[in-house]
Structure formats: C-alpha cells, structure tokens
Image 1 (cartoon, rainbow, N blue to C red):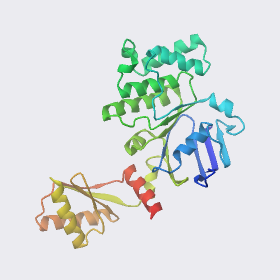
Image 2: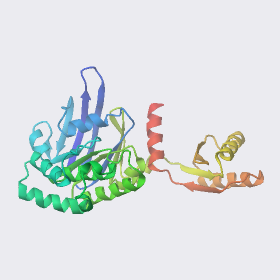
Image 3: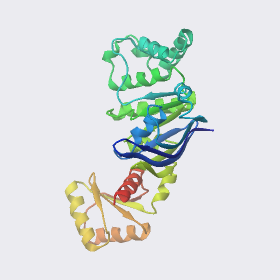
Length: 313
C-alpha cells in the first residue's frame, strides 16, 4: 500500500505562475521519503496540497488510498505536519503542550496522557519535565514539537526542514528521532531538507524536483545511476597549493574541468583508473607536494548539483 500517490499534479496560481507541472511520484507506507529541490522548485506548494491547505489545479492525489479532493477531512485526521517555525507555547509546561495538542486532535484525556508519557520517554524528554519550556534549546524545542504532533499517532508525518539551524550534534540526535518514528511507530515520514547528507543517510526513497516536475526518483544508491562518472580528489596542505595545482592541471589538459573545496581539487572523470595513474605520475614528475589522491563515488550532493545545473543550462 502506498501512503501517497501523485499523478500528473498541476498547481497554477491566479498570477499565472505554475508551481507544479505534471508532477508524478509515490511514497511507500512506513518509509522516510525526502523531497529535494532548489528554492522555487515547488516543494512548499506540494506540501500545502498534500496537507489539504491548497487545492490542485489538475491531476490526482491519493493519500492512504483516499482521494485528496474528495476526502480532505478524513485525510487531515491521518496526518500531522511540523512546519519550519516551532509551534510550541512557551507559557505552558512540556506536558501541558502535549495535552493541548491532543485536544486539537480530539484524543481522549486518558489516551493522551498515556501516549504523551510514552512519547516523552521515547524522545528523551523526561529530564526536561521540571524545566520551563522557554529555557529549552532549539533542538529540544524541535524534539518537543515533533512529539506533540505524534500524540494523534498520525499515519503520515510531514517534516519541513526539521533540522534547519541546528548544530551537528543536535541534528544527529534528530536523525535518531526520525528513524525511531519510522521503525517503532511505523509512521511514514515525508521530509523536506536542504541538508543533502541528511537525506542520503535517512531516506528510503528520494525525489529531486525542479520547476514543478521531477528530475529523479529512487533510493539514495540508485540515484548514482544518473552519472556514469566518478570523482577524483587531490588533497593539499592549504588552499593556495590546491589552486596553483588546479591551474597547472587544466593547462596540461589532463583535466578538462575542476573545482576547489576545502584545500582539495575535485574533478569528474570517466576512465577512473587511467586518469588516476596519469595524474599521479604527473604530480610526481613535476615534484608537486600533495597530501592525498583518491577516487570517490559521487555523493548525493554531486548528483543533485549535476541534475539541477544541467536542467538550468
């Protein structure tokens, strides 16, 4: 059973802007699904449609086998959405926030208290019960925000950039929370994020979209098929050495293009072994001091940039 099926979805606003242009893909039940795209890709419009806030211009959407346009009230009872802006009330205690949210979803008091205690324990919030919510860090507030939205035990949880602005420690803690929601509560997570490493590590499936339509869909591993190239990385002690070597390599025509990141040269290459041997030999013959040279598989970020930039060009 699919959690969400989108078929040739179009959303055109009154000003003529077409935010979604025959978009099609599906989301499986019980998976973490990530929707990726540059700003203006149509992600927000899609989420607003899937959460029943907007109506589509044309196309079909089913959520848990129900037609989105025919059964919006039923669908709203099966989903929850955690927006970018944290929605907790800092004047209420942690438990009061949980109970207030439960009343919005019409969960009876006894069930709400039982679920709240289980969620507080599961999300590692027990130690914060005695402190005022206003004193919580951003990461703990976000954790509480998600726990509140789980009180209704939604079948689908929409998370719109849940880790934005977090430090890496808080972000990784949130990754564990998301995996727990999928694995322990069997909840489908529909995630949007600009952190491609996050999508790569968490997602069962990913859709990359731009200008309202999909560019690629599949598992993080299967998306590697969108490039037949590997990446050569040459590491140096400092940025200046990397820049000077890059200029010389381009002049030698051993590389047709390269870019510099973090004191390293990165270049897409097709014949990995031969290119590696030729450049390694050239570096040694020219007495160029380098720290490392290696062949890397393209990351999700590399695939994302390749697809979105190719689409633009």
